[in-house]
Length: 249
Image 1 (cartoon, rainbow, N blue to C red):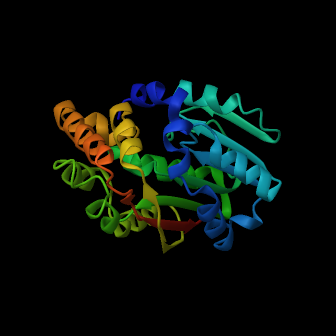
Image 2 (image 1 turned 90 degrees about the vertical axis):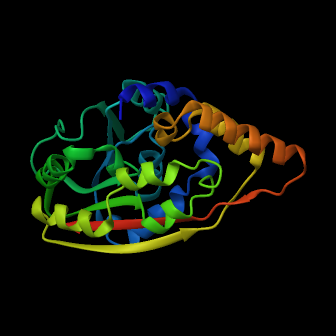
Image 3 (image 1 turned 45 degrees about the vertical axis):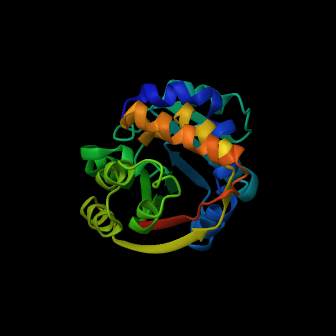
């Protein structure tokens, strides 16, 4: 996935996705699984810095965020978070010394890595101290197959099934990269999405998958959503079915 997609999204990223995110709930699950004991935390693929801000606020720790997109990093820096640092960097070449972090997080990043995943996981193992933990949030197969916009975008499921690696494969790759053990938790988040807002987000390409679809398919979906909203259709049921893959050095 080109960094240009995220450079383009950066100025509106929080506006387009803010009400869809469930940072607090996911952070609490990560805390329950060991993040709460960390003093130095790294967020890989930090975007506009929302999770870093919450980690600093909730845990009172030092946190760093890295992202390949320069525009995302600029948005993150504008938050002015005391106790946080942001750097533009590729996930397979992190600008930190060995064993510097107690914990690392990755949220909706792993599907963007493709063949780089083994190198990225090895790099994360390098910068984590012994017994340091990685908290990797992704979507499971149940989420992809039941995605609320799938009925509007016929090609979406096949595209995302190619992009999102199965959780069992992620565990195997993490162990091969030097993590001693892995485990998983599933978290479902119920939410509702206004159809006109869904149409606006589609036209803005609010998730990276949209850039991989036929623009005519995307516009047809947005137009259908607008028509349904104008006819008084209720909000869409849009359950997020998250998977946390956790790993310990």
